[in-house]
Length: 288
Image 1 (cartoon, rainbow, N blue to C red):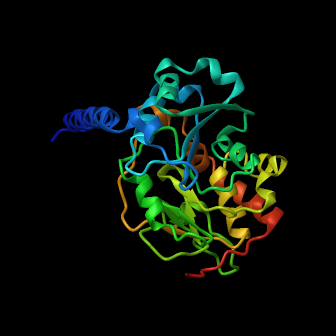
Image 2: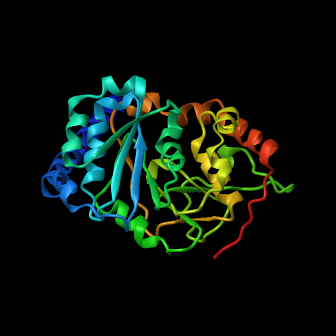
């Protein structure tokens, strides 16, 4: 097959896949999502928390509808938006308040808005963070919740990397880690990535997690790094759910994705070095 023909075929297949995904989201929304406000639990389950910003607002409603249509009903689904960006939210997003979505303005803490404002309020429920540019399949939340052992200081994720260490016991370059590991052991060397969704149990962080000055200085574009470090320093381990799923991002959203800077400019390595300098590195290969 000629290269240009192959390119057309790949693009067409991708478009058809996205159209099918959009149709499924609408069907799930009709079946469950629009009834979220009446179905949600009160006080016994988890809180789903995410943030967004204007370059992602065009597809944000798709992600939100997939979160509102989950088989496991969250206590709350909260969208944190910088105060200056609130007026730019499109009607397709703001209309979802009627289904029970909470949209809360907050300080502009960049990607940290997905969890820091909730922790600042003293939240003591399990928190599941999600990204704003992803389709979350119907039992996405249920899989995270079922993998959790209540009372255990263990972070559960759908997608994680495995940190490799140098002979001196420090992490090798980020690009040399075992990406999207299938390893299912609980370990402090597992590194959850927010794009797949991550469940943080109550009391998983110490007070240092709220040090805005520190994470702004050491990890300005690495909230995954900061939250991993803070949970691990408090004794938590990290584990992947039993079954892996493909993760689909909305077309066009990756043009403004953080991961391009984090990999291309070696931003993650710089941030990890800064964290080692500030907090040391004590992760162990402990399993539970």
